[in-house]
Image (cartoon, rainbow over all chains, first blue to last red; front, top):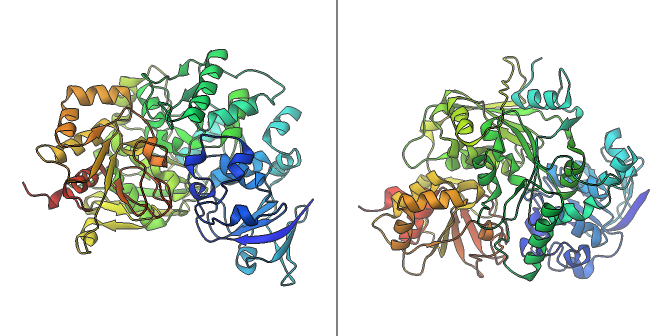
Length: 161
Length: 424
Protein backbone atom coordinates (compact mmCIF):
# COMPACT_ATOMS: atom_id res chain seq x y z
CA UNK A 1 0.00 0.00 0.00
CA UNK A 2 1.31 3.43 -0.92
CA UNK A 3 0.42 7.04 -0.27
CA UNK A 4 1.36 9.79 -2.69
CA UNK A 5 0.59 13.47 -2.60
CA UNK A 6 1.58 17.06 -2.00
CA UNK A 7 2.98 18.02 1.38
CA UNK A 8 1.49 20.42 3.90
CA UNK A 9 4.22 21.24 6.40
CA UNK A 10 3.80 22.21 10.06
CA UNK A 11 6.07 22.65 13.08
CA UNK A 12 6.27 21.34 16.65
CA UNK A 13 3.33 20.62 18.97
CA UNK A 14 0.44 20.82 16.50
CA UNK A 15 -2.34 20.28 19.03
CA UNK A 16 -5.77 18.77 18.55
CA UNK A 17 -7.40 22.14 19.30
CA UNK A 18 -5.94 23.58 16.10
CA UNK A 19 -6.49 20.36 14.13
CA UNK A 20 -10.21 20.54 14.96
CA UNK A 21 -11.29 23.37 17.30
CA UNK A 22 -13.67 22.35 20.10
CA UNK A 23 -16.31 24.78 18.84
CA UNK A 24 -17.01 22.23 16.09
CA UNK A 25 -17.15 19.21 18.41
CA UNK A 26 -20.89 19.48 18.70
CA UNK A 27 -20.72 17.41 15.52
CA UNK A 28 -19.17 13.99 15.01
CA UNK A 29 -19.85 13.87 11.26
CA UNK A 30 -16.51 13.23 9.47
CA UNK A 31 -17.33 15.44 6.47
CA UNK A 32 -18.40 18.35 8.66
CA UNK A 33 -15.27 17.98 10.81
CA UNK A 34 -13.09 17.81 7.68
CA UNK A 35 -14.50 21.18 6.61
CA UNK A 36 -12.80 22.80 9.62
CA UNK A 37 -9.61 20.73 9.69
CA UNK A 38 -6.48 22.73 10.69
CA UNK A 39 -8.63 25.87 10.71
CA UNK A 40 -6.88 27.64 13.61
CA UNK A 41 -3.36 27.02 12.33
CA UNK A 42 -3.83 27.12 8.54
CA UNK A 43 -7.02 28.69 7.22
CA UNK A 44 -6.11 27.71 3.64
CA UNK A 45 -5.70 24.00 4.36
CA UNK A 46 -9.27 22.93 3.59
CA UNK A 47 -9.30 25.07 0.43
CA UNK A 48 -6.09 23.54 -0.89
CA UNK A 49 -6.01 19.95 0.32
CA UNK A 50 -6.57 17.25 -2.30
CA UNK A 51 -7.24 13.56 -1.87
CA UNK A 52 -3.97 11.76 -1.15
CA UNK A 53 -2.07 14.77 0.20
CA UNK A 54 0.38 14.29 3.06
CA UNK A 55 0.96 16.22 6.29
CA UNK A 56 4.55 16.49 7.51
CA UNK A 57 5.15 17.93 10.96
CA UNK A 58 7.85 18.07 13.61
CA UNK A 59 7.67 16.98 17.28
CA UNK A 60 4.62 15.91 19.32
CA UNK A 61 2.00 16.06 16.55
CA UNK A 62 -1.55 15.76 17.89
CA UNK A 63 -0.84 16.75 21.49
CA UNK A 64 -3.64 17.78 23.82
CA UNK A 65 -7.18 16.47 23.83
CA UNK A 66 -8.07 12.81 23.23
CA UNK A 67 -10.67 13.81 20.64
CA UNK A 68 -10.70 11.16 17.91
CA UNK A 69 -12.35 13.88 15.85
CA UNK A 70 -8.78 15.08 15.08
CA UNK A 71 -7.54 12.06 13.09
CA UNK A 72 -11.10 11.61 11.75
CA UNK A 73 -11.06 15.18 10.37
CA UNK A 74 -7.61 14.69 8.83
CA UNK A 75 -8.62 11.40 7.22
CA UNK A 76 -11.93 12.74 5.96
CA UNK A 77 -10.14 15.78 4.48
CA UNK A 78 -8.41 13.32 2.17
CA UNK A 79 -4.99 13.15 3.80
CA UNK A 80 -3.34 9.81 3.04
CA UNK A 81 -0.56 9.90 5.63
CA UNK A 82 0.89 12.00 8.45
CA UNK A 83 4.66 11.97 8.88
CA UNK A 84 6.13 13.49 12.04
CA UNK A 85 9.24 13.45 14.16
CA UNK A 86 7.08 12.18 17.05
CA UNK A 87 3.36 11.86 17.76
CA UNK A 88 1.53 12.53 21.02
CA UNK A 89 0.51 9.14 22.38
CA UNK A 90 -3.29 9.43 22.30
CA UNK A 91 -3.23 10.74 18.72
CA UNK A 92 -0.91 7.86 17.81
CA UNK A 93 -3.38 5.29 19.21
CA UNK A 94 -6.36 7.00 17.66
CA UNK A 95 -4.79 7.17 14.20
CA UNK A 96 -3.99 3.45 14.25
CA UNK A 97 -7.41 2.59 15.66
CA UNK A 98 -9.29 4.42 12.89
CA UNK A 99 -6.90 3.48 10.09
CA UNK A 100 -5.18 6.83 9.40
CA UNK A 101 -1.63 5.92 8.32
CA UNK A 102 1.09 7.66 10.35
CA UNK A 103 4.87 7.36 10.21
CA UNK A 104 7.48 8.53 12.70
CA UNK A 105 10.60 9.72 10.89
CA UNK A 106 12.66 12.65 12.23
CA UNK A 107 14.86 12.77 9.11
CA UNK A 108 11.88 13.02 6.74
CA UNK A 109 10.28 15.59 9.02
CA UNK A 110 13.36 17.77 8.65
CA UNK A 111 14.19 16.99 5.02
CA UNK A 112 10.81 17.42 3.34
CA UNK A 113 9.50 20.89 2.40
CA UNK A 114 5.99 22.23 1.96
CA UNK A 115 4.68 21.57 -1.53
CA UNK A 116 7.02 18.64 -2.22
CA UNK A 117 5.60 15.55 -3.90
CA UNK A 118 6.10 12.65 -1.50
CA UNK A 119 5.43 8.93 -1.71
CA UNK A 120 5.22 6.59 1.30
CA UNK A 121 5.49 2.82 1.00
CA UNK A 122 3.72 1.42 4.06
CA UNK A 123 5.11 -2.09 3.58
CA UNK A 124 8.74 -1.02 3.71
CA UNK A 125 8.40 2.28 5.62
CA UNK A 126 10.37 4.03 2.87
CA UNK A 127 9.47 7.68 2.32
CA UNK A 128 10.50 9.20 -1.03
CA UNK A 129 10.60 12.94 -1.67
CA UNK A 130 10.01 12.90 -5.44
CA UNK A 131 10.62 16.65 -5.74
CA UNK A 132 14.05 16.53 -4.10
CA UNK A 133 14.96 12.97 -5.10
CA UNK A 134 15.68 11.96 -1.49
CA UNK A 135 14.58 8.91 0.50
CA UNK A 136 14.09 8.28 4.22
CA UNK A 137 13.46 5.16 6.27
CA UNK A 138 10.43 5.53 8.51
CA UNK A 139 10.05 3.51 11.71
CA UNK A 140 8.22 0.21 11.23
CA UNK A 141 5.21 -0.58 13.41
CA UNK A 142 5.34 -3.50 15.86
CA UNK A 143 3.65 -6.60 14.43
CA UNK A 144 0.62 -6.19 16.70
CA UNK A 145 -0.09 -2.71 15.36
CA UNK A 146 0.49 -3.85 11.79
CA UNK A 147 -2.32 -6.34 12.31
CA UNK A 148 -4.67 -3.57 13.48
CA UNK A 149 -3.69 -1.45 10.48
CA UNK A 150 -4.14 -4.41 8.10
CA UNK A 151 -7.61 -4.93 9.59
CA UNK A 152 -8.35 -1.25 8.83
CA UNK A 153 -8.79 -0.41 12.48
CA UNK A 154 -9.21 -1.82 15.97
CA UNK A 155 -12.85 -2.87 15.73
CA UNK A 156 -12.38 -5.08 12.69
CA UNK A 157 -9.28 -6.51 14.35
CA UNK A 158 -11.24 -7.41 17.50
CA UNK A 159 -14.11 -8.86 15.46
CA UNK A 160 -11.64 -11.19 13.72
CA UNK A 161 -10.11 -12.42 16.99
CA UNK B 1 15.75 -5.10 37.17
CA UNK B 2 12.71 -3.99 39.17
CA UNK B 3 9.41 -2.56 38.03
CA UNK B 4 7.98 0.92 38.49
CA UNK B 5 4.63 1.39 40.25
CA UNK B 6 2.88 1.74 36.87
CA UNK B 7 4.54 -1.39 35.52
CA UNK B 8 3.45 -3.39 38.58
CA UNK B 9 -0.19 -2.40 38.14
CA UNK B 10 -0.08 -3.20 34.43
CA UNK B 11 1.62 -6.56 35.03
CA UNK B 12 -1.10 -7.56 37.48
CA UNK B 13 -3.88 -6.45 35.12
CA UNK B 14 -2.28 -8.41 32.28
CA UNK B 15 -1.88 -11.51 34.47
CA UNK B 16 1.90 -11.42 34.10
CA UNK B 17 4.65 -11.83 36.69
CA UNK B 18 6.76 -9.17 35.09
CA UNK B 19 6.59 -6.59 32.35
CA UNK B 20 9.19 -4.21 30.97
CA UNK B 21 9.14 -0.90 29.12
CA UNK B 22 8.17 -1.26 25.47
CA UNK B 23 6.32 -4.56 25.93
CA UNK B 24 2.85 -4.76 24.37
CA UNK B 25 0.25 -6.18 26.73
CA UNK B 26 -3.48 -6.65 26.99
CA UNK B 27 -4.83 -5.55 30.37
CA UNK B 28 -8.17 -6.03 32.11
CA UNK B 29 -9.99 -2.78 32.79
CA UNK B 30 -11.62 -1.73 36.05
CA UNK B 31 -13.36 1.30 34.57
CA UNK B 32 -14.08 2.78 31.14
CA UNK B 33 -15.06 6.44 30.98
CA UNK B 34 -16.56 8.73 28.36
CA UNK B 35 -18.13 12.17 28.09
CA UNK B 36 -20.66 13.87 25.83
CA UNK B 37 -18.08 14.65 23.13
CA UNK B 38 -16.22 11.37 22.92
CA UNK B 39 -18.97 8.87 23.82
CA UNK B 40 -21.25 9.46 20.80
CA UNK B 41 -18.36 8.50 18.48
CA UNK B 42 -17.71 5.40 20.62
CA UNK B 43 -21.40 4.48 20.75
CA UNK B 44 -21.58 4.61 16.94
CA UNK B 45 -18.52 2.34 16.79
CA UNK B 46 -20.14 -0.12 19.25
CA UNK B 47 -22.62 -1.05 16.51
CA UNK B 48 -19.77 -2.45 14.43
CA UNK B 49 -18.84 -5.12 16.97
CA UNK B 50 -20.06 -8.63 16.23
CA UNK B 51 -20.48 -9.18 19.98
CA UNK B 52 -23.23 -6.87 21.23
CA UNK B 53 -23.65 -5.09 24.54
CA UNK B 54 -21.19 -3.92 27.20
CA UNK B 55 -18.75 -6.08 29.19
CA UNK B 56 -19.94 -4.87 32.60
CA UNK B 57 -22.62 -2.24 33.19
CA UNK B 58 -21.06 -1.39 36.58
CA UNK B 59 -17.62 -0.65 35.16
CA UNK B 60 -18.56 2.06 32.68
CA UNK B 61 -18.98 5.72 33.60
CA UNK B 62 -20.73 8.15 31.27
CA UNK B 63 -20.57 11.81 32.22
CA UNK B 64 -22.02 14.50 29.96
CA UNK B 65 -19.96 17.47 31.19
CA UNK B 66 -18.26 19.23 28.27
CA UNK B 67 -21.18 20.92 26.53
CA UNK B 68 -23.69 20.10 29.27
CA UNK B 69 -26.10 21.48 30.33
CA UNK B 70 -26.68 21.39 26.56
CA UNK B 71 -25.21 24.46 24.90
CA UNK B 72 -27.01 24.08 21.56
CA UNK B 73 -29.15 21.68 19.57
CA UNK B 74 -26.25 19.59 18.26
CA UNK B 75 -24.84 19.22 21.80
CA UNK B 76 -28.30 18.27 23.00
CA UNK B 77 -28.37 15.50 20.39
CA UNK B 78 -24.99 14.21 21.62
CA UNK B 79 -26.15 14.19 25.24
CA UNK B 80 -29.35 12.44 24.18
CA UNK B 81 -27.32 9.78 22.37
CA UNK B 82 -25.31 9.13 25.56
CA UNK B 83 -28.43 9.12 27.74
CA UNK B 84 -30.22 6.62 25.48
CA UNK B 85 -27.19 4.35 25.31
CA UNK B 86 -26.91 4.44 29.11
CA UNK B 87 -30.58 3.59 29.49
CA UNK B 88 -30.52 0.80 26.92
CA UNK B 89 -27.43 -0.82 28.46
CA UNK B 90 -28.49 -0.08 32.05
CA UNK B 91 -25.21 1.72 32.75
CA UNK B 92 -25.04 2.14 36.53
CA UNK B 93 -22.76 5.17 36.54
CA UNK B 94 -24.48 7.56 34.15
CA UNK B 95 -24.66 11.06 35.62
CA UNK B 96 -27.41 13.35 34.44
CA UNK B 97 -27.35 17.13 34.84
CA UNK B 98 -28.21 17.66 38.50
CA UNK B 99 -26.02 14.81 39.70
CA UNK B 100 -23.25 15.32 37.17
CA UNK B 101 -19.94 17.07 37.70
CA UNK B 102 -16.73 17.46 35.74
CA UNK B 103 -15.76 13.84 35.18
CA UNK B 104 -12.30 13.84 36.77
CA UNK B 105 -13.53 15.55 39.92
CA UNK B 106 -16.73 13.48 40.01
CA UNK B 107 -15.45 9.92 39.67
CA UNK B 108 -13.03 9.94 42.63
CA UNK B 109 -15.68 11.71 44.70
CA UNK B 110 -18.17 8.95 43.81
CA UNK B 111 -15.58 6.34 44.79
CA UNK B 112 -15.29 4.84 41.30
CA UNK B 113 -11.52 5.20 41.06
CA UNK B 114 -9.25 3.56 43.62
CA UNK B 115 -5.63 2.51 43.99
CA UNK B 116 -4.54 -0.39 41.81
CA UNK B 117 -7.28 0.14 39.23
CA UNK B 118 -6.59 0.16 35.50
CA UNK B 119 -8.78 2.87 33.98
CA UNK B 120 -9.15 4.20 30.45
CA UNK B 121 -11.19 7.25 29.60
CA UNK B 122 -12.02 8.93 26.33
CA UNK B 123 -10.75 12.19 27.74
CA UNK B 124 -7.10 13.12 27.91
CA UNK B 125 -7.25 14.17 31.56
CA UNK B 126 -8.19 10.67 32.67
CA UNK B 127 -4.65 10.55 34.06
CA UNK B 128 -6.04 12.42 37.12
CA UNK B 129 -6.75 9.20 39.07
CA UNK B 130 -3.05 8.44 39.38
CA UNK B 131 -3.29 10.72 42.42
CA UNK B 132 -4.94 7.77 44.20
CA UNK B 133 -2.41 5.22 42.98
CA UNK B 134 -4.42 3.95 40.01
CA UNK B 135 -3.09 3.48 36.47
CA UNK B 136 -5.35 5.69 34.40
CA UNK B 137 -4.84 7.09 30.95
CA UNK B 138 -6.65 8.95 28.20
CA UNK B 139 -7.65 7.21 24.99
CA UNK B 140 -9.87 7.96 22.00
CA UNK B 141 -13.40 6.92 21.22
CA UNK B 142 -12.51 3.68 19.40
CA UNK B 143 -10.46 2.49 22.37
CA UNK B 144 -13.36 3.46 24.61
CA UNK B 145 -15.74 1.41 22.43
CA UNK B 146 -13.40 -1.57 22.50
CA UNK B 147 -13.06 -1.18 26.28
CA UNK B 148 -16.83 -1.06 26.77
CA UNK B 149 -17.31 -4.13 24.59
CA UNK B 150 -14.46 -6.32 25.80
CA UNK B 151 -13.31 -4.95 29.19
CA UNK B 152 -9.76 -4.98 27.90
CA UNK B 153 -7.28 -2.62 26.26
CA UNK B 154 -3.86 -2.94 24.71
CA UNK B 155 -1.00 -0.91 26.13
CA UNK B 156 2.65 -0.42 25.42
CA UNK B 157 4.26 -0.65 28.86
CA UNK B 158 5.76 2.77 29.54
CA UNK B 159 9.18 3.66 30.82
CA UNK B 160 9.15 6.24 33.59
CA UNK B 161 10.47 9.55 34.80
CA UNK B 162 10.76 9.93 38.55
CA UNK B 163 10.01 13.20 40.29
CA UNK B 164 11.29 13.05 43.84
CA UNK B 165 9.52 15.68 45.92
CA UNK B 166 11.00 17.03 49.15
CA UNK B 167 10.01 19.82 51.55
CA UNK B 168 6.60 21.47 51.64
CA UNK B 169 4.89 24.24 49.67
CA UNK B 170 5.09 27.88 50.79
CA UNK B 171 1.96 30.03 51.18
CA UNK B 172 0.00 30.67 47.94
CA UNK B 173 1.89 27.88 46.16
CA UNK B 174 -0.16 24.83 45.19
CA UNK B 175 -0.21 21.62 43.20
CA UNK B 176 -0.87 23.71 40.09
CA UNK B 177 2.41 25.55 40.56
CA UNK B 178 4.22 22.22 41.04
CA UNK B 179 2.97 20.78 37.76
CA UNK B 180 3.45 24.02 35.79
CA UNK B 181 7.00 24.15 37.13
CA UNK B 182 7.59 20.55 36.01
CA UNK B 183 6.12 21.08 32.54
CA UNK B 184 8.21 24.24 32.22
CA UNK B 185 11.26 22.18 33.12
CA UNK B 186 10.73 19.16 30.83
CA UNK B 187 8.50 20.59 28.08
CA UNK B 188 5.15 19.57 26.59
CA UNK B 189 6.67 16.37 25.21
CA UNK B 190 9.15 15.85 28.03
CA UNK B 191 7.36 12.74 29.27
CA UNK B 192 6.12 11.51 25.87
CA UNK B 193 4.87 7.89 26.09
CA UNK B 194 6.17 7.66 29.69
CA UNK B 195 4.73 7.48 33.18
CA UNK B 196 5.47 10.33 35.56
CA UNK B 197 6.09 8.76 38.95
CA UNK B 198 6.08 10.98 42.01
CA UNK B 199 7.97 9.90 45.11
CA UNK B 200 9.51 11.43 48.21
CA UNK B 201 8.58 12.71 51.65
CA UNK B 202 7.33 15.98 50.16
CA UNK B 203 4.19 14.14 49.04
CA UNK B 204 2.96 13.93 52.62
CA UNK B 205 2.54 17.71 52.62
CA UNK B 206 0.35 17.66 49.50
CA UNK B 207 -3.43 17.47 49.90
CA UNK B 208 -5.46 15.05 47.76
CA UNK B 209 -6.68 18.04 45.74
CA UNK B 210 -3.09 19.11 45.04
CA UNK B 211 -2.25 15.58 43.92
CA UNK B 212 -5.29 15.42 41.63
CA UNK B 213 -4.16 18.68 40.01
CA UNK B 214 -0.61 17.40 39.50
CA UNK B 215 -1.66 14.01 38.06
CA UNK B 216 -4.33 15.72 35.94
CA UNK B 217 -1.73 17.65 33.94
CA UNK B 218 0.69 14.75 33.32
CA UNK B 219 -0.77 14.69 29.79
CA UNK B 220 0.40 18.28 29.27
CA UNK B 221 3.96 16.96 29.47
CA UNK B 222 3.01 14.20 27.01
CA UNK B 223 2.88 11.62 29.81
CA UNK B 224 0.93 8.40 29.56
CA UNK B 225 0.01 8.70 33.23
CA UNK B 226 1.06 10.41 36.43
CA UNK B 227 1.06 8.37 39.61
CA UNK B 228 1.50 8.87 43.35
CA UNK B 229 2.31 6.27 45.99
CA UNK B 230 -0.61 5.39 48.27
CA UNK B 231 -0.15 6.93 51.70
CA UNK B 232 -2.47 7.53 54.66
CA UNK B 233 -3.96 10.64 53.01
CA UNK B 234 -4.91 8.68 49.89
CA UNK B 235 -6.23 5.78 51.97
CA UNK B 236 -8.33 8.10 54.08
CA UNK B 237 -9.79 9.69 50.92
CA UNK B 238 -10.69 6.30 49.47
CA UNK B 239 -12.24 5.09 52.74
CA UNK B 240 -14.36 8.23 52.90
CA UNK B 241 -15.51 8.05 49.29
CA UNK B 242 -15.47 4.45 48.17
CA UNK B 243 -16.58 1.01 49.20
CA UNK B 244 -14.38 -0.51 46.50
CA UNK B 245 -11.48 -2.73 47.49
CA UNK B 246 -8.23 -0.96 46.66
CA UNK B 247 -4.87 -2.56 45.96
CA UNK B 248 -1.63 -0.86 46.90
CA UNK B 249 1.32 -1.32 44.57
CA UNK B 250 4.78 0.02 45.25
CA UNK B 251 7.69 0.51 42.89
CA UNK B 252 10.53 -1.95 43.39
CA UNK B 253 13.58 -0.43 45.11
CA UNK B 254 15.59 -1.24 41.98
CA UNK B 255 12.98 0.07 39.54
CA UNK B 256 14.56 1.70 36.50
CA UNK B 257 13.77 5.30 35.61
CA UNK B 258 14.79 6.93 32.33
CA UNK B 259 15.29 10.23 34.11
CA UNK B 260 15.10 11.44 37.72
CA UNK B 261 14.46 14.91 39.08
CA UNK B 262 14.47 16.12 42.69
CA UNK B 263 12.18 19.05 43.42
CA UNK B 264 12.29 20.95 46.70
CA UNK B 265 8.66 22.05 47.10
CA UNK B 266 9.66 24.85 49.48
CA UNK B 267 11.68 26.47 46.68
CA UNK B 268 8.70 26.77 44.31
CA UNK B 269 6.97 30.06 43.51
CA UNK B 270 3.54 30.83 42.07
CA UNK B 271 3.98 29.83 38.44
CA UNK B 272 2.07 30.86 35.31
CA UNK B 273 2.17 29.28 31.84
CA UNK B 274 2.06 31.99 29.18
CA UNK B 275 0.40 31.56 25.77
CA UNK B 276 0.35 29.28 23.83
CA UNK B 277 1.89 26.23 25.50
CA UNK B 278 1.76 24.89 29.07
CA UNK B 279 5.58 24.74 29.02
CA UNK B 280 5.93 28.54 28.81
CA UNK B 281 6.29 28.81 32.58
CA UNK B 282 7.21 32.02 34.39
CA UNK B 283 7.41 32.55 38.14
CA UNK B 284 5.53 35.40 39.77
CA UNK B 285 8.87 37.06 40.55
CA UNK B 286 9.63 37.18 36.80
CA UNK B 287 6.12 38.44 36.08
CA UNK B 288 6.39 41.20 38.69
CA UNK B 289 9.49 42.46 36.87
CA UNK B 290 7.63 42.65 33.53
CA UNK B 291 5.33 45.33 32.14
CA UNK B 292 1.85 44.71 33.63
CA UNK B 293 -0.28 42.31 31.56
CA UNK B 294 -3.91 43.50 31.44
CA UNK B 295 -6.52 40.75 31.85
CA UNK B 296 -10.14 40.68 30.60
CA UNK B 297 -11.42 37.44 32.16
CA UNK B 298 -10.55 34.95 34.87
CA UNK B 299 -11.83 31.37 35.09
CA UNK B 300 -11.62 29.41 38.33
CA UNK B 301 -12.72 25.82 37.82
CA UNK B 302 -12.19 22.76 35.56
CA UNK B 303 -11.03 19.18 36.16
CA UNK B 304 -7.67 20.69 37.09
CA UNK B 305 -8.73 23.26 39.70
CA UNK B 306 -12.48 23.17 40.43
CA UNK B 307 -12.24 21.30 43.73
CA UNK B 308 -13.19 22.55 47.16
CA UNK B 309 -9.70 23.57 48.28
CA UNK B 310 -9.34 25.53 45.02
CA UNK B 311 -12.55 27.43 45.76
CA UNK B 312 -11.46 28.02 49.36
CA UNK B 313 -8.19 29.60 48.23
CA UNK B 314 -9.99 31.76 45.64
CA UNK B 315 -12.49 32.86 48.31
CA UNK B 316 -9.69 33.66 50.74
CA UNK B 317 -8.22 36.02 48.15
CA UNK B 318 -11.56 37.51 47.06
CA UNK B 319 -13.07 37.96 50.54
CA UNK B 320 -13.78 41.62 51.24
CA UNK B 321 -12.45 42.59 47.81
CA UNK B 322 -14.08 43.23 44.45
CA UNK B 323 -13.08 42.19 40.96
CA UNK B 324 -11.67 44.99 38.80
CA UNK B 325 -14.08 47.11 36.78
CA UNK B 326 -14.70 45.40 33.43
CA UNK B 327 -13.31 42.04 34.62
CA UNK B 328 -15.39 38.89 34.12
CA UNK B 329 -14.57 36.41 36.89
CA UNK B 330 -16.23 33.03 36.31
CA UNK B 331 -16.19 30.46 39.12
CA UNK B 332 -17.20 26.88 38.31
CA UNK B 333 -17.43 24.36 41.16
CA UNK B 334 -16.51 21.01 39.59
CA UNK B 335 -19.29 18.89 41.10
CA UNK B 336 -22.67 19.27 42.77
CA UNK B 337 -21.17 18.15 46.11
CA UNK B 338 -18.42 20.77 45.84
CA UNK B 339 -21.03 23.37 44.90
CA UNK B 340 -23.13 22.43 47.94
CA UNK B 341 -20.16 22.47 50.31
CA UNK B 342 -19.00 25.83 48.91
CA UNK B 343 -22.48 27.16 49.57
CA UNK B 344 -22.53 25.84 53.14
CA UNK B 345 -19.11 27.33 53.85
CA UNK B 346 -20.23 30.71 52.53
CA UNK B 347 -17.76 30.66 49.63
CA UNK B 348 -20.43 31.35 47.01
CA UNK B 349 -21.53 34.44 48.92
CA UNK B 350 -17.95 35.70 48.92
CA UNK B 351 -17.72 35.15 45.15
CA UNK B 352 -21.00 36.92 44.46
CA UNK B 353 -20.17 39.84 46.74
CA UNK B 354 -16.83 40.16 44.95
CA UNK B 355 -18.62 40.51 41.62
CA UNK B 356 -17.80 37.04 40.30
CA UNK B 357 -20.37 34.72 38.71
CA UNK B 358 -20.86 31.12 39.82
CA UNK B 359 -21.80 28.49 37.24
CA UNK B 360 -23.19 25.00 37.48
CA UNK B 361 -20.52 22.32 36.90
CA UNK B 362 -19.35 22.17 33.27
CA UNK B 363 -16.10 22.01 31.30
CA UNK B 364 -17.59 24.92 29.31
CA UNK B 365 -14.96 27.61 28.78
CA UNK B 366 -11.88 25.40 29.30
CA UNK B 367 -12.13 24.08 25.75
CA UNK B 368 -13.88 27.08 24.26
CA UNK B 369 -17.29 25.45 24.46
CA UNK B 370 -19.40 28.10 26.17
CA UNK B 371 -19.77 30.03 29.46
CA UNK B 372 -16.86 32.38 28.83
CA UNK B 373 -15.60 32.48 25.24
CA UNK B 374 -12.89 35.03 24.49
CA UNK B 375 -13.15 37.69 21.77
CA UNK B 376 -10.34 38.82 19.47
CA UNK B 377 -7.24 39.80 21.42
CA UNK B 378 -8.73 39.18 24.87
CA UNK B 379 -6.66 37.74 27.70
CA UNK B 380 -7.76 35.27 30.36
CA UNK B 381 -6.06 34.01 33.50
CA UNK B 382 -7.44 30.52 33.88
CA UNK B 383 -7.00 27.65 36.33
CA UNK B 384 -7.62 25.22 33.45
CA UNK B 385 -5.00 23.05 31.77
CA UNK B 386 -4.38 24.17 28.19
CA UNK B 387 -3.50 27.50 26.62
CA UNK B 388 -3.24 26.45 22.98
CA UNK B 389 -4.08 28.84 20.14
CA UNK B 390 -7.85 29.37 20.04
CA UNK B 391 -8.49 27.02 22.96
CA UNK B 392 -10.92 29.38 24.73
CA UNK B 393 -12.19 31.34 21.77
CA UNK B 394 -10.76 33.63 19.08
CA UNK B 395 -7.41 32.55 17.61
CA UNK B 396 -5.81 35.81 18.77
CA UNK B 397 -7.07 35.46 22.36
CA UNK B 398 -4.58 34.47 25.05
CA UNK B 399 -4.74 32.15 28.06
CA UNK B 400 -2.45 32.34 31.07
CA UNK B 401 -2.61 29.11 33.08
CA UNK B 402 -2.34 29.65 36.82
CA UNK B 403 -3.43 28.54 40.27
CA UNK B 404 -6.74 29.63 41.84
CA UNK B 405 -4.82 32.06 44.09
CA UNK B 406 -3.21 33.80 41.12
CA UNK B 407 -6.45 33.81 39.11
CA UNK B 408 -8.38 35.37 42.00
CA UNK B 409 -5.71 38.00 42.63
CA UNK B 410 -5.61 38.83 38.92
CA UNK B 411 -9.40 39.21 38.93
CA UNK B 412 -9.09 41.83 41.67
CA UNK B 413 -6.31 43.89 40.10
CA UNK B 414 -7.20 43.38 36.45
CA UNK B 415 -3.61 42.47 35.68
CA UNK B 416 -1.70 39.19 35.95
CA UNK B 417 -0.48 39.13 39.56
CA UNK B 418 -0.22 37.06 42.73
CA UNK B 419 -2.06 37.45 46.06
CA UNK B 420 1.03 39.01 47.65
CA UNK B 421 0.57 42.08 45.48
CA UNK B 422 -2.90 42.83 46.93
CA UNK B 423 -3.00 45.44 49.65
CA UNK B 424 -4.87 44.62 52.87
